[in-house]
Length: 162
Image (cartoon, rainbow, N blue to C red; front, side, top):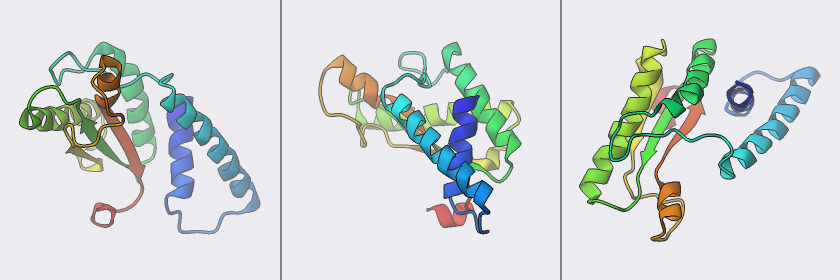
């Protein structure tokens, strides 16, 4: 829970709050920024579990439920937040299959969150297939890093996001 709450609090403070912050809020924002950097370090070292799917499928694995439940709690607790879910695949299979799979996996995340009470209009899904790899390479470890779902949180209206 700490990961999601701090992550979202940091994003809220830095993603377009329209009012001026008082000194206590500025200190909270500074601390949240430091915590966010720590969280980003954990994400890059893969010490926060990824969203996992069954092989060649958009079926979520049970190991993903805990993280997605935390994401749902944050979204339910902050009704102005909007979530962008981006699906990515590795380069095995055809480009068409990978594109479809990335959209289906991002959609599975949205469906799971909706089942937890998150309003579907607050979540947008995009699939990028194999077009945005994190790393280049043919090793299984490289491909595993490219198979991912990414989250981006915003407080902006959908019309101004893209």
